[in-house]
Length: 197
Image (tube, rainbow, N blue to C red; front, side, top):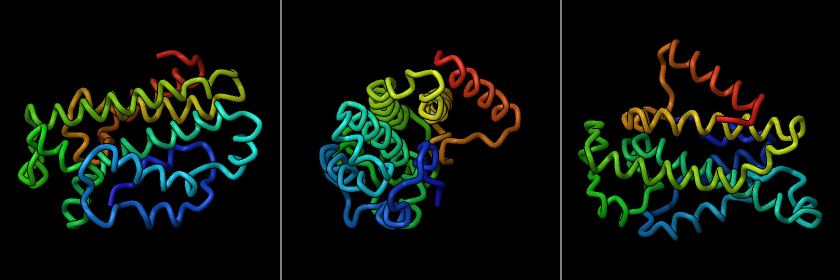
C-alpha cells in the first residue's frame, strides 16, 4: 500500500486511524460527484483539532483547509489506484471517468503509459492544482503560513513529476533516484521560503 499523501498535511489529524481505515470505498464509485461526496465524509477525521473554532472565527480559512485536504485526497486517489487495483479493492477513480478516457485493467496490470493514461493523469493534476490554488492564501503570512506553503510545495512537486512522467503515478508519485529527490528538495525549499514557483 502506498503511503498516503495526507502525511503532507501540516497538522496532526483528528482521527488518522479512522481516516486510513476508511481510505477506500466499499464499492466502486460511478461519477466524480460520488468521489467528492466520499471525500467530504472523510474530512472530519483529517481536519486539524481547532477546525471548529476556526470555522466560527474565520470560515474562509476553514474552507481553504478543507480544500487543501481535498487536494491531498484527490491526488492520493490517483497515486494509490494501482495498489487498490492489485489488492482488488475499489479504486478512488470513478468508473465513468475510466471508461470515458478508456483506461482499463490492462493499464494497471502492465503500467501502460499511453494517451488514455496521460489524459487521466492530466485531469487529476488539474483538479488537484485547482484545489491547491484555492488554498494558497493559507500560506500568505510569511512565518505563519510557512507550514502550509511547505505542504503545497510538496504536493506541487508530485504533480510536476506526474506531468513529466505519468508512469510515476503508478509508483506512488515519488522518484527513487537521488538526483531527482535532491532537485525536488531544492524546489520545495525555494517555494516554501519565497512562496514562488
